[in-house]
Length: 68
Image 1: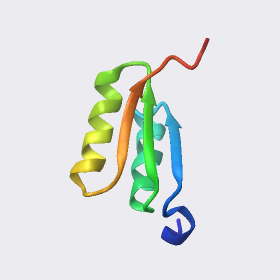
Image 2 (image 1 turned 180 degrees about the vertical axis):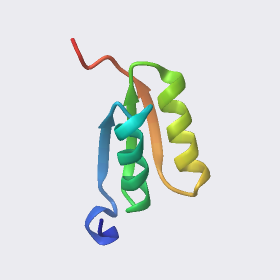
Image 3 (image 1 turned 45 degrees about the vertical axis):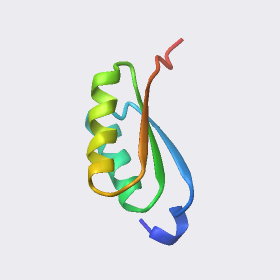
Image 4 (image 1 turned 60 degrees about the vertical axis):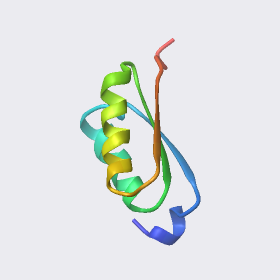
């Protein structure tokens, strides 16, 4: 994934607390995007966002149920 293409962009990732969503969030962050991690539970998405921030990258998190 090109860093130039995503630098300065905001990416919202649903299901970012685990599995594929988590992997996508981390990859987008490493490509220099600001990642908004969203999952149904704050605990899971907060952990992913914090690990991204701890790596010196940009992220925030929100607990949201997008199914309804």
